[in-house]
Amino acid sequence: MKIYNTLSRKKEDFIPIEDNRVKMYVCGPTVYDYIHIGNARPMIIFDVVRRYFMYKGYDVTYVSNFTDIDDKIINRAFEEGVDAKDIAERFIDECRQDMEGLNILEASINPKATEEIDGMIDMIATLIDKGNAYVTEDGTVYYRTRSFKDYGKLSNKNIDDLEAGHRTIQVTGDLKEDPLDFVLWKPMKEGEPFWESPWGKGRPGWHIECSVMSKEYLGNRIDIHAGGEDLIFPHHENEIAQSEAANGEPFANYWMHNAFLNIDHKKMSKSLGNFFTVREISEKYDLQVLRFFMLSAHYRSPLNFSDDLMESARAGLERITTCADKLEFLSDNSHNPKLTEDEKELLEQAGGFTKKFEEAMEDDFNTSDAIAAIFELVRFCNSNTSNASKAFVQGLYDQLSMLCDIMGITLKKEKEILDKEIEDYIARRQEARKAKDYALADQIRDELLSRGIQLKDTREGVLWTRV
Image (cartoon, rainbow, N blue to C red):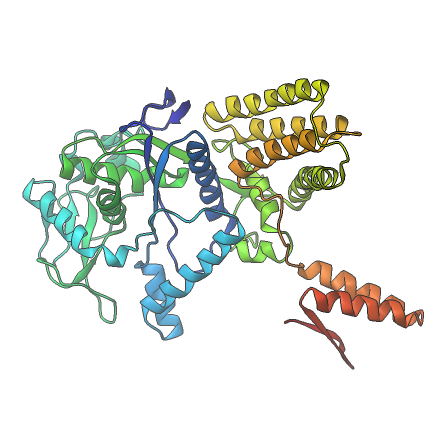
């Protein structure tokens, strides 16, 4: 299996630290709002990476955190007049709901930053003792960036160039020894959450959180650290500096990063009005469509989101699920229970699509080519199942189901009716009533009710609610 390692900038053979075990850390969301579709891409991509490792027989420990203390969380709490904890807990629950809709496997461990403060204080103290960090008069603890000689090895940035022109890791303040030093612990401000520490009341910086949670649940050295490419610098660069200085050994053997998601070829931005949450997308599309769309391109390639591409993804997914429905129907209704000799040969031939799928996934998790192999299997199924035996059809279904399961594509699912579908039903019912076809109007109303939608006719129009 080959993995593109951001650290070496090349594909490398995957060799686990421990035989048949994978230790994997994926940076999770900061929970101050609903997750957006940019957040969803790494969640889906690395869920598939995990699923493939499991398919290959590895025992995967998958850790993905929730950053539940942050300036954005605190600011929202101030705006709503509630505690920061209330904001974080609310949006952790909402995030879990969206992840379930996206069919993302529950992590082995979902640590919360606020529950790991003691470990952060311990690591910061170690860095101070080793001379990699220092405390200023106001109780801020900074990391001495120049104390780590390999700083910049992940992002391929030169530290002297950073000082000359880059400001992305600079934190304002006159007490730092060097403009490049970054915060490990910040003193409390009035009204903000805080924890006691040897340096006074305060809270941790963002970067130290992931270093500590990875160490706590996976050990000093892990197999894979992953996230979006926006995290390469400064977040992951700073994680390496902290972890390797504190622990005295390499942090992660492989660094994986997915490329950006753009909206109609533009960067997603609230100011541009092209910012979409997963929850908003779920009102228009089944989230399986969003998942399928995300897997349609290689994870290291930029991905453009548009209505046209989502419609294409919906059609592609429908081809697969329609084939699965057909195979299931044929299996249930076949009068030929046993495989023929010709069918045995055809099943062996169909196994070639699994081999193609595996070859794609073994080459740096090329989900685009893996989906192409699934489509080849679908075409094969559609062309070779006339008068087929039950055993043959079931064998094809099992193969299709197995490959789709690795991709997290659900072949059998009770789909919740979407808002657009409801409006279409209501429009048809209104047309039936105008035509005085009251039997059809009642039938449409009853159909909606059977799917959990209750209609109410008012002078303002037809209102509907989910029941």
